[in-house]
Length: 356
Ligand SMILES: Cc1ncc(C[n+]2csc(CCOP(=O)(O)OP(=O)(O)O)c2C)c(N)n1
Image (cartoon, rainbow, N blue to C red; front, side):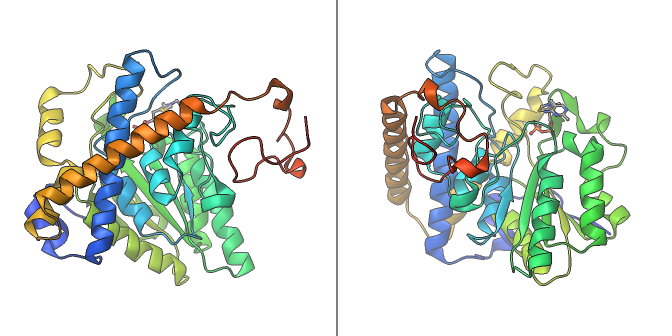
């Protein structure tokens, strides 16, 4: 049966009060959490000021899921994210500066100016598969990667993320079923932020949890508190070890709340204010880890201040880099249509491909 964990962790109880990682890694984890939160807040501000074109899909409030699951992957394991998972992609190794160039449609962005927001990946650089719009298409593609690992005897694991709404799509069930039959090295993560656009969980599925759907596929299912990044990390680590050992997939449901609208244009008037206030006050994954590390004496208030200064400087550098990066050359429009032309390298700029 699926294991249910009541998602009500207080900071002092994080991860059962133990430290599952060395202190320097915990500090690095706090840095990534704070960087991604700051990025999310500043990008929204720039969007509202009309200084950022295109669209934004905030993952604020869900960073515990993103950072927790990705932290447990090895560099050569693969991540299959969806539209709200930029924090997971940055944790896996996407470069903040290039992500910002992407948002401003510049040549140094990961799609070299072909997309203006979250359809990003860097398969060659850090095994982050490009985000695709059709939900949850990352799941069946992750099945393919996991099958390839198994057939080639490679010791890697694929980890895919989707939202709660995506679990109502047939592709979700087909992917999990196939992976369970063939005991593929894959981990299924559902970032349950309680709303699919404006539809609440109760209108999405007729059972109390998503984790218990694992029972129908004969695989383990765990439900964790997305406000506790260490609890998420430990569940992901166990699932990844299990997959790598050849014991097949695990379904992880990580519960949080989407603090902002579906996208920048959505004021989220359907969100009950009491629920939002509760999650912002009591289930903030960034503040929870910070409070825990302060209480454990791993960091001081001064360290946290210094970390924030670093985060602000990193954002500013990214912003300058993005605005200084040129727009793509029209002559390059047809490059990269075929893999053979070598256009899609991991390098920024116009590198790769035939000359214009
Ligand atoms: C197959 C498909 N149907 C509809 C959409 C339009 N769409 C984009 S995001 C979204 C909501 C998805 O909700 P959920 O899976 O819970 O993820 P969240 O956005 O909450 O993170 C919808 C319906 C889509 N991209 N793909």
